[in-house]
View 1 (cartoon, rainbow, N blue to C red):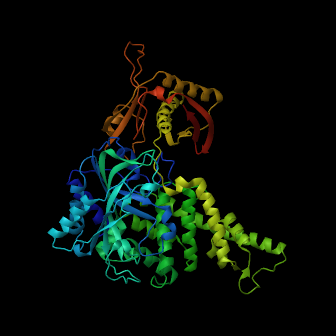
View 2: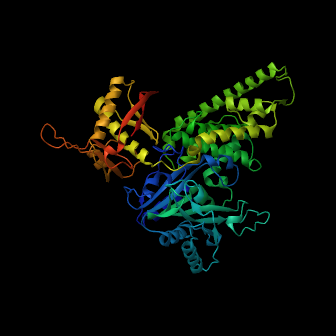
View 3: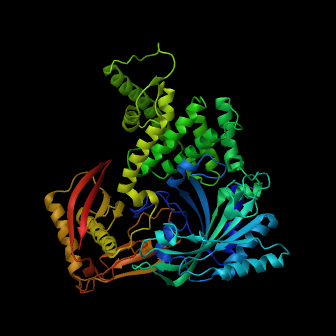
Length: 612
């Protein structure tokens, strides 16, 4: 059974139970400034979990591409990957535990054919004033009893899911709830220490894979730290495709499943090394290149900030390990990664050349960085009278300060510094790197942790102001102008659009005046759920690409009460499809002020503005 077979079985299973399939959201999220990547299936659905009606109804199913930068340092063991595909099914105020848990068991044991005796269950143990999840425990024990199996159900206080972690870590306004997890036990893993391999919550030996997780979203955290029930209880199921495949193939090493095996074989052929005995190096090389391919496909390019920084870190870590394996041309490995990935993500083939060239260009840039780092070190050593050069045998000792300077200036790793012929105090360097990372995380904490999308009152005003600005620009510059991107926070609105020159001061003033005029008119803001064809017919603004479902939410601003020349009432001022949320009337935005504009090159412009 291939990864695509599992996807097909899963989608059909839940479509047969009344679910509508929704498309995969972009790996680089739109309009969510609080996180760099889509890291879970839940992330794009936050507005609907908080009560917004979904265009496709209350029962949804999907396969979501995910990337978790926090797992970069975990890669190297038998089960962690930075990129993965998450199977998801959703109940938005519809069914709950009584339906979800039996369906999950049926899918795993009948559809996938997993041995029932190898499945272990965990439920929420409770936390302070949040009660023990006895309901899930009872359902599971009834299932095991009907199957004439010993009930392997364990309670754990970590069985809670939210974007930010445990209840005390959650910010106000974030939804969360208890979860029940399913683990698959591998018999070929040797358990060490006090671990007997009979309880997944106490095993750190890699003998259990968490393969499924049903979150029962029933709480929202208040401003005072307490929890209250959501107006509607939701189910959020997530099953990692790669781990499910490992269970189906009974492979305790996720990198030896059919998803990775062809990539590993390619690395073996090109390096002359075997996977066994070099597992960690092979795993990091394969995982990071695979993740980089998906991130590049999503539009990111290597750089020194945000998504580009993570992409660069991924690639350079893979290059380091490729260097350890004494690999040569990377192109065949990249081609193999794209070929394998296109079996589930066919768009990779469409963007084959762009993806491949982006990664190879970064590899070339990194080689130049190595040369630059070496010159920097030799210049410093020469200034101090220390001899360097190829005639010296062995490693040249350098200070941790100089090692860190080359690392910070050229993006080198400790491994690469050693490969260049330098030795240093690794502990001191590690402390300097840790200190630097702490400063960086402090300044960009929410983005790198993958926080909850901002739905504050100020940000909601910004969303509505963006619609007004979009229409005002089209009124002034013509209907060929369209939004190419936006980023909205509680501090400002950022709006990108296609145009071949900077706007004049007079044009900026005119835009501002038009948006504020519509704000003062106190126009109603409403939405309607309709098909994409209907949205196009009524003139809704949108890119209408394949990332949207068959049905969309179309927001209208207006209509104006002013009559047209013919005496008829004018239609809505703005018609645009958007997930929301928005204000109810434009006067709630209060005011709109453009702060600055920038050129993005390639015929693109960016405006920054503030509201209310």
